[in-house]
Image (cartoon, rainbow, N blue to C red; front, side, top):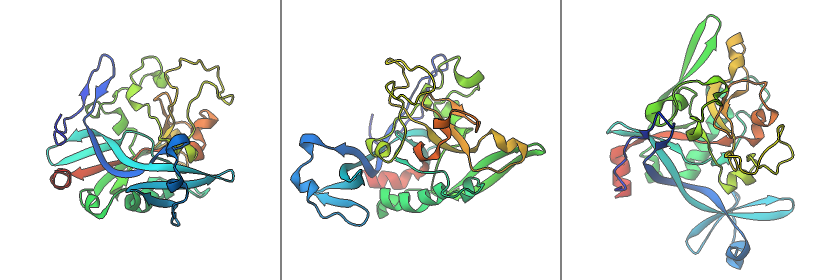
Length: 293
């Protein structure tokens, strides 16, 4: 496929599987550098206050854990093209890129007031994309639906970088199964919502399914297809908002691809400091073409 030939997803309703066009755009610390790849030049480089340094033209991020440093290489971010309307690309990150709380306070908040939205709009936007790339990222009017006993409320925000909604993750033209199955376990048509984190995101706290993890509440098997997958945020609220409460917890996608909208779910699924961030955004195709050519 030509690098500018961004096709819409090819979705198989019988199997629930999809094939997406891919785009490499922006960069972020992702791959851990260790063992023989960890050279003296990387270790002894002059790291700035953000923990970043450039060695032989390659950018690295250094973080301290347990009194020792770990090093991560900045790589191009891979995105799945969810939709191409001829003018705009709607894309989602192919991996969980970081680990962030939905909100940094104990207050009850919705998407528009969350610290995660602020982080994506500022810190992530400025870290991951250079000035030329930023020109291709469109401001999008984002709708988030809140369900109350007396009817639905739709809150609108203007976002460059955001996280997907439950509705978007149940849209077949984007490559996702579009119907709810009881517990979404009976038929494995949630496979395209399974997400793996980068090694950097995992180092920052993202919990990854591991059959050797003794914290699992059920007996895990070594051949479990969820191995290496993580939980990740949506901007949609969890089920408790239907009772009129605006609460901090939001719906998440679990390591099995299930959309978990209930606060009383498994503790590991609702502990915010172990949940991955999987951004989405809209790109101007003409500007993007000028950048990539």
